[in-house]
Length: 263
View 1 (cartoon, one colour):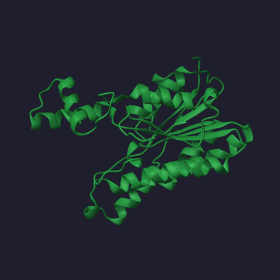
View 2 (tube, one colour):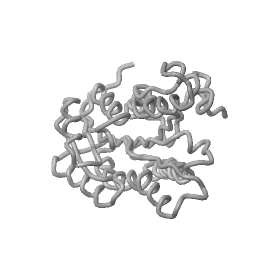
View 3 (cartoon, helix red, strand yellow):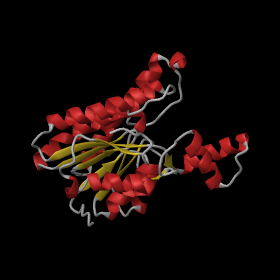
């Protein structure tokens, strides 16, 4: 299957590192002009953009309204007409029902919902004018099956998925599609480091395949018997951004190896 995103401009939030960087690389490989974003003004966005063959980058803390405004202003200053928005930025924080404050809940909403909503509002006029656009929000299977811990995070990601369905109705007939991609556990360097530390404490050994078996048995049972790779998530996002996915709209698509079993 040939996916051609030439003549399209894609902003991937949180793309200076980890899964966001891999998504940006996949979109670049498909021909899109990539705008790299970093929450920090530390040069990481410029460095990553250069690595991906782009000179386009923006900086701003998306958890803040001022940061979102700064990102939108930088796009305008650079004359970038973004028609693909991948809201990859978002973050979780540990917490239990009895130990999460109002500020904890608001923090998760700012980082996982309003960060996306503000950019969507800022970029939609250009997409409407062009008569084409793609919005892909990164969620979690926790919005399908939330656990007892991190209720504030799962609630926020659930709101993000609901936002996407509402936006789909608003954009009917415009040529703009909106979808949510909800991964299970993704094999990232940070996740592996965390599990290796846990394995050392629990006596699982230091062989990654042995550790992986414990992860699948105890934390993430799924018929595929493994974790998602960042590239698999990026491939799904890239497909949804393409012309070939033009009739996929308003969906919350799980990429979880079959971990959640319902029709």
